[in-house]
Image (cartoon, rainbow, N blue to C red):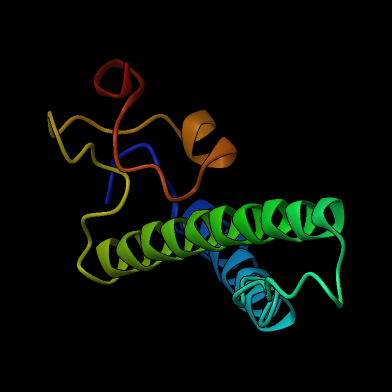
Length: 115
């Protein structure tokens, strides 16, 4: 773990990530069905209503992809914590600033490498 991170800071960041992970999983369960195939029956739904439904479906699918990406990043960060690799840049090996980790606890790159 990075030298500039205390055990209490790491524990606090882990708590933030676990809370966010639980929140994302709950949102995933709530969103089930929003990305289902839109029925194209013109008798039951007008053209504009279908277009609106299709747009909402696309937005739900994009949100699901973002949630999956965030969950994957959190899983990787938690694994790095377990392996005592957390807090170090995955690219250059330098410590990641605590302020950066406060903003994004799942960050795997330092500011310089993230640019």
